[in-house]
Image (tube, rainbow, N blue to C red):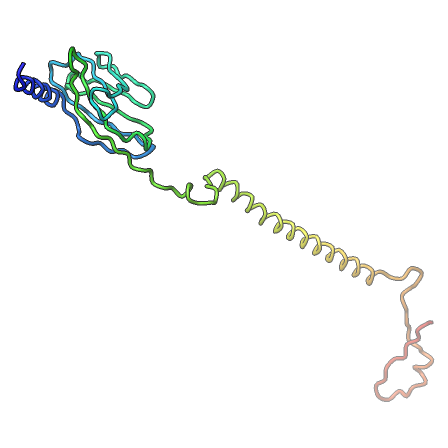
Length: 221
């Protein structure tokens, strides 16, 4: 077989691989997130098995997940693949992405002889640094904040309530003390009688009759 024939066969094989199945050149995902890509194929490959493999070298890439020949979704670890035979596309989903997931992958169709495939470059961007990771303070959720608010509220209200109760008690004691003091002042001494005074007629007659004069009172005692 001449070199020209070999080259033609190789070129036709490569052309077939490139045209019978198509897909995105690159896809990008975020660390800890997920990505989904779709590869398309010709109608003649509708019932053939489709796969997703990893590795820069086509001939030695590792198949990670493969369809069963139907439209049923197949899951394996963090990967899933589903064949939409009506639209002649199959979808690959990668979940819980990691930094080391970045690599060269292939959308492929299993067939007799050389499988069909198209190369897809997957890149993973680092996750955004969150406040929880960078801060030395613990993150408080709404439940913790509610509990702290209740404790703070009680720590303020309890002393205030006790102070008000104490003031009321002191005021009540003062009121009772004043009432008792007034009762003591208004109570007569036991055994004593009220002082009764009567006019002194004898002394009154000795006074001059002219002019006004005060009556003399005679008080015992």
